[in-house]
Amino acid sequence: MSRIVIIGAGAMGLAAAHRAVNLGHEVDLIEADAVAGGMAAHFDFGGLSIERFYHFVCKSDEPTFALMRELGLGDKMRWRPTSMGYFMKGRIHPWGDPISLLRFPHLSFVAKLRTGIQMFLTTKARSFASIEHKTARQWLEGGSGREVYQTLWKRLMELKFYELADDISASWIATRVRRIGNSRKSIFQEQLGYIEGGSQTLVDALVKAFTDNGGRLHLATPAEQVVTENGRVTGVQANGRFFPADAVISTVPTPFISTLVPDLPADSKAKYDAIRNIGVVCLLFKLKKSISRNFWVNIVDDTIDIPGLIEFSNLRPVDETIVYVPYYMPTTQPKWQWSDQQFIDEAFGYIRKVNPAITQADLVEAKVGRLKYAQPVCEPNFYDKLPPIETPIAGLQVADTCYYYPEDRGIAESIRYGRRMAEAVLR
Image (cartoon, rainbow, N blue to C red):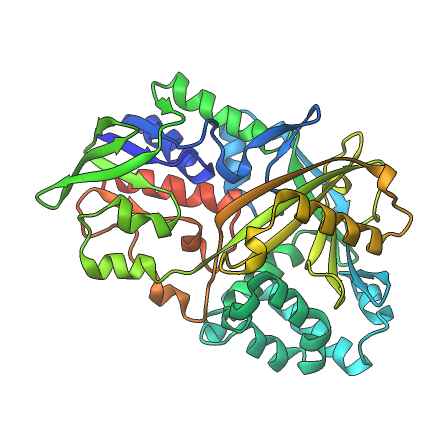
């Protein structure tokens, strides 16, 4: 068995650490934050324990269900009928089922037919290799038509990726459509899931199982350098302390790798540096009134500079209305420098535009979270851009959420990759 150091105690790092210690390894898990969980971690929002960044579960997320069963949490999964809407031209239109599509007033009949067929076929596809070379725009316009892209997608893509909007992979978009499209009770009813108590329930169980089995968790311990000798890892320098290791698993964002692993060959560093990311400023509101009956409202309105609202309390029942407002953007955008209050004021104004019945008196509390590297930018043929998980340095594996491609970031993929990397140490 080996001494393993795992960098990053987000969902992937926790899954890797849990699997590695169960395989008999000696494991140190180091985390820069004061809490474990990464994007899945909770915070105290006026007495409510809730995720800093929203999460939901789909019916295809088998790695999550398998791990929950292993941890004795199999009875903590909850499913709820959910719905989506499109806010356009002053009102929310139902979306996400055949009847809503037919009744949608802002597309021609031919456009509705084409998008219905494309989305249905996408949910049935086993692979998207045939569209791997295409951009999302090329794929959507080729299948649903330019009218659909211009009406439903263009504004959303531009408000998430800005100048990178036309660089996004068709496979990445199609995989997201398939995952959501297949999480249904019937063709007429979407059904998403949540863990009772939130993602923290799973985080806490992973931490307990890991430490009970002899694993060592080191919080508030930022990794400074992966140390190597003669082309092999020897350990990790973190917070002024050296952690010896026969193997190292890094789960931190790839933009940190060149600095974190200075002994990597120059061509490897260049590959990590070439992976682009955008940031997120994620606002969380507690309101006295509901905005709508929908879990997710996409927004296509030239006067509203956010792509949507996530009314989380329409998925996980809590006492008050909880709404996430994500501002995704490249960190080169001037808006990235805004103060928390500027974001709160603007976003709450947008909430009131979507539902004018909401007044200033309905705002109970607001919180702003930021991540500089929140969303990898996955362009066509993104597989070809990814360096191998096993690096040229013996004993060192590196992966972050971009390796989930064509899947998007999610706890299920974090679990799958974390366990895979722990198991690869033996090989």
